[in-house]
Length: 467
Ligand code: NAD
Ligand code: UGA
Image 1: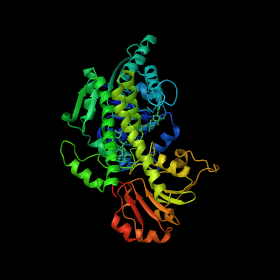
Image 2 (image 1 turned 45 degrees about the horizontal axis):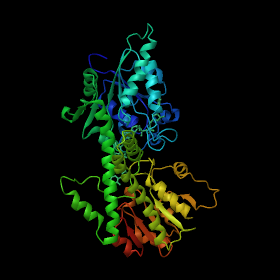
Image 3 (image 1 turned 60 degrees about the vertical axis):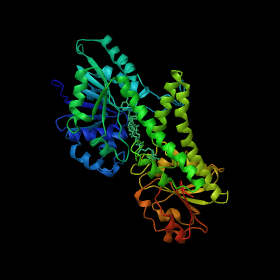
Image 4 (image 1 turned 120 degrees about the vertical axis):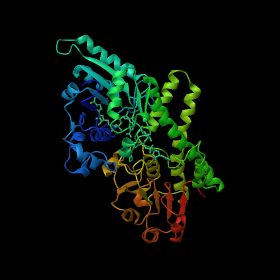
């Protein structure tokens, strides 16, 4: 590192954040070397795959950008030790899921991967290293990271006697399916920290493509909390509009009209007002639970309850849609084939983490339905794993996977659209109605269909948020 010009960067964690983020950094900063490391060998092999359809994540535009910099100034590898040793700056982009057991289970974030990363850095780093929190973390995690890093000073030997660290928080705001655009044109970049030299070094990297006005500098704790708060606010809008979708179905108001009418108020804004079967993804629920845990820790129970209600509405929305499907099909779906269109938590990603489709499909399976699932990007094995499906279980329905919409519709009683993939927006309904059972239903939770066409083709029709 010369002055505050970073030359070598290491990113720990080659997942949905580490991979795309470093690909964009490497394209925008050709003078800098980026090494992305992971414990998971098969993930690294997939990132190095010659066949770009085999990359570990699907994200529009990712393959093209990867081609331009892979093995030039961007490397994916498992050699964590040497990548850390030579780095001037290290991003920690590891997973921080909700804890499954022990103190705080079901709410607190599991920080074992963060701690392991900090320990690896403490052990292998040389000279001065800037450590950047990219993962989403509970407020004051930087303190823990600092303590672990400082513990390495105790083991000072001649070789690394000048080992020093600065810790920054630089949360990521990308959304999956739009990650490349979000990374190339972010609304803002947030950097929390205390050390001016470290902050300037990170600002310099971003300045290769982001104007200085978009770079916000705060203290560490504001930065960590802002990430949790941003996700909580986004999720809260979805629960708000989903709660209104239920009122629309009772009253004859139309949710799209209501959403448009309220979004035109510039104080409210148009984005994130699309109703859905519930928000999914790896972060909204996890980060709100994390916020709730923090509130409870500080005895802010009213605040905790407020954010809990955002999650309650989300779970209720999924349940209410499952029940509605059963009710419309004469209260009985046992051994009835239902075509499920979409399994990813949103379009343009193969990610299914916390997808609303998981809870909805599980409810329908519990009722004995035979589900026939088609998603253009999600692998069948992933769906089986997510649904925890055991084909030998006799008290449940069955699962089948299809390669096209038509195949999944043959002989089915209903089509349930759960992800807004483009291919679900131009379905030839009159063709499908001929191969399905009679009467047959369309349940559209993602606004992919027009009621007129569906009704003309002879379907019974239900769309979220309208009568
Ligand atoms: P991910 O599970 O896809 O990737 C994390 C990777 O880190 C895994 O491949 C894992 O093997 C690796 N890892 C864990 N411990 C390691 C260690 N000690 N050494 C090397 N590798 C290690 O997770 P993700 O979706 O990329 O999310 C990462 C973080 O970013 C989370 O805190 C998440 O909340 C946050 N985030 C995610 C998104 C998103 O869209 N997915 C957006 C913004 C922020
Ligand atoms: C979300 C945030 O948008 C990102 O800013 C953040 O960085 C990221 O979480 C994270 O921390 O992981 P992501 O989960 O990838 O990004 O995708 P979103 O576009 O936010 O969608 C999340 C869920 O909300 C999806 O299930 C989507 O269908 C649903 N959604 C979104 C709605 O139901 N309605 C909307 O209007 C928007």
